[in-house]
Length: 199
Image (cartoon, rainbow, N blue to C red):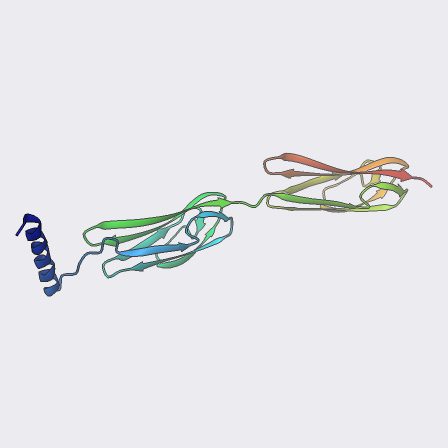
């Protein structure tokens, strides 16, 4: 019998004896973790569902989830909510006798929706009569913030309300401008121009 054959025979004998004595074989991993989605880009407030299934030797410890809520939990099954833009990870930790602590990490890029703003005045431009009214509104999302209106030629000449009405106060040119801020862009202005007629 060759040396390799003798080694195989010895291993088979030891393994058979261990089974006969009821000694469990130690798993190399102790269980498996899964998350859906498992990686990639996700939006702020998106959810990731995760679960850990131990085998006969693994003992689950906890999840760690920076960038998510909750940031940690000892439940084998958990749902995590992305809380901020940037990188985020979800890691399962468990232990295996003879092998110690094990872990598996799922990595994500968390994206925030782009800021947006909608500014409207009715009418939007053109010739209007003295004392006529122009109604204006601002709506912003994802960080776009209203500051104020300026309205030369109208009453009131300014307003800090996102929704406002302006009355044409004198003949000639007039304008209504929405002033607001957008993350990454700073101050932004959008102007509506009018010709105010006295007749």
